[in-house]
Length: 145
Image (cartoon, rainbow, N blue to C red; front, side, top):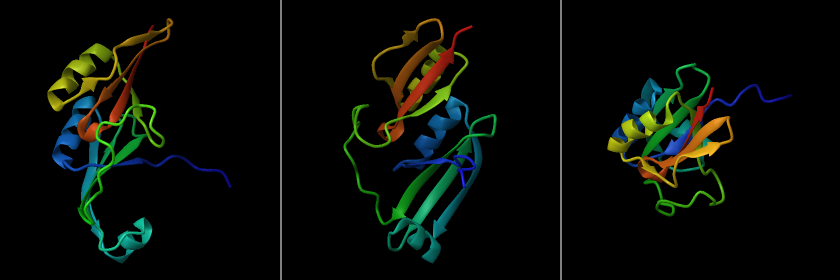
């Protein structure tokens, strides 16, 4: 049997409100918030005594979602602060945007920092990586006419 779809990407954050504000400013829409705990959460994650706040945000087309998770318990362990783009494992989430420069300007008050610059990929795209809340690298791509 083949995979039906990718349902969501989960990102563990320490400051839920800052992360949520960043992704809402980017243009994602809040689908819902909840908290999970108990035996099902423990069994699914392989952790004990899970108590987690969750905010689900989706792209405007409704096809892609991010699950932002803030663990009350067990306390989330910190990885390297602001890891480089070439670290093993998940390294970024990328979004298509209408206007890359305007998007970066709107995200700056939410802590976004451009990692390098805005690059032109031939006549196809403007591309940039920004570091958002919790050190998350967010790719932005503007398709050129």
